[in-house]
Amino acid sequence: MIKFEQVSKVYSGSHQALQKVDFHLKQGEMAFLTGHSGAGKSTLLKLISLLERPSDGRVILNGNDISRVSRRHVPYLRRHIGMIFQDHKLLMDKTVFENVALPLVIEGYSRAEVERRVMAALDKVGLHGKEFCVPVHLSGGEQQRVGIARAVVNKPPLLLADEPTGNLDPKLSTEILKLFEAFNSVGVSVLIATHDLGLIAKMRYRTLTLRNGKMLSDGLMGGEHV
Ligand code: ADP
Ligand code: ADP
Image (cartoon, rainbow, N blue to C red; front, top):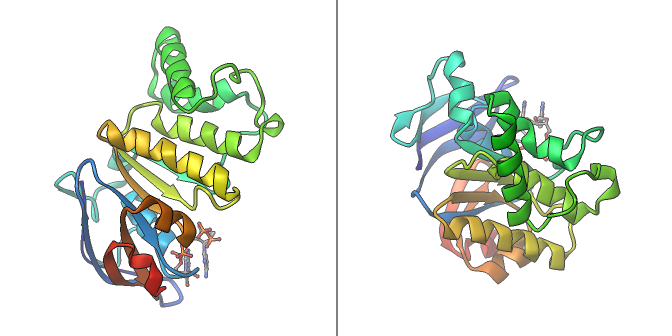
């Protein structure tokens, strides 16, 4: 699914955010990505979602080297990735329905198909009945569920989450992780960047650990070395 081969990223100003990173996430696998603040977690996710380009090395997505794809192919590739952010990035003046529908509307699905898929996505994340609410009237946990529904609504084979539980208490964090598990159990690959070691310890998944831009460890419970 995702393969990094000796990937380095240097931002302008010569700050090295990633250094010769290698890893492979298989189709259907779920893993955590951890490390201190500034370790390079967001950068790694941005290289997969093509929000940033590597300075060196190869990023391979489904067998295609995406390090050098042309700009016009980027929207097409991104359609196969569901992205979830700590701050949700919801449109606050739109309803839950409109927020979740957005990726489908952009793709030009029919009204009936949009409705069917949005309701199915809201059902999966436990937000049935909230479709006409606006995000400000929802709790932090519910807002994150809207973000997840929007990420999965066009059924991408890969979910990338950047600190998805950053603003949530441990109980809500566990519930959000259970949602990721449910998507993973039907074959979706999931990569979750988090510095929440308590959560990682509880869930016992493969853990990729970055330190100062280098891959420090890769295995079960790698987080304890951070
Ligand atoms: P993390 O997500 O683990 O906190 P990041 O990937 O956000 O780490 O950042 C890794 C390093 O790269 C940090 O030192 C950060 O300041 C730097 N960095 C991130 N984005 C940029 C950017 N757009 N320009 C310059 N430096 C950046
Ligand atoms: P995140 O919480 O996702 O790691 P950050 O707060 O680190 O995000 O960064 C927010 C935005 O600013 C990102 O787009 C990141 O690429 C950019 N950024 C981070 N560090 C730097 C930096 N040192 N110089 C310029 N841009 C940066």
